[in-house]
Length: 74
Image (cartoon, rainbow, N blue to C red; front, side, top):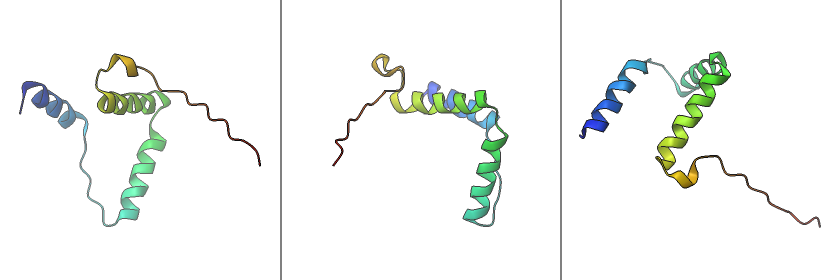
């Protein structure tokens, strides 16, 4: 494990919380409750974290892409 990986793991350990549930439905309910309680800023921060993980620090993908699709009407 590299130093960067160790540092990331240590950061996650500070913020992650482990909870035990009895079913997938209960897990889904807890997840929904967590995100409903989160502020818009927290949600956006989580989205940005996921984007960074997916695209790393690729300078060409710094923002969300906008896609325009023209669909011909029948």
